[in-house]
Image (cartoon, rainbow, N blue to C red):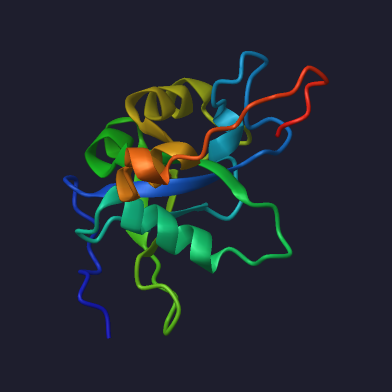
Length: 156
């Protein structure tokens, strides 16, 4: 039984796991609208009152090991998404993921509305995996491992 409401409110945040796949990043390495293309709805996870790092760790833990890993995450505010003619709907997966939701264009067309999708991405926050690790385990001087390179360029 989920403690989350079936109604996704405008003050919630959703997270999209980003894969290193064709069309997801532009030639400058920025997220492109390809990260929001999915014909049957864009899978996201609701924050559900969790810390960002907990959301990301949960999403990583649920990713099958035989599939490409996430390379970063996009955190988006539901109110901002809706301001750009998209909708977010709760779609919990029973006994697996109560936080699952889907976002899609309110008025689907043959092609993705690049202007609205770009605005959603630009208003979101990109979270890379190193940022999450840094939030979880700040390094103390006695836990740091110094990596040096020999003249051959091989780590020693």
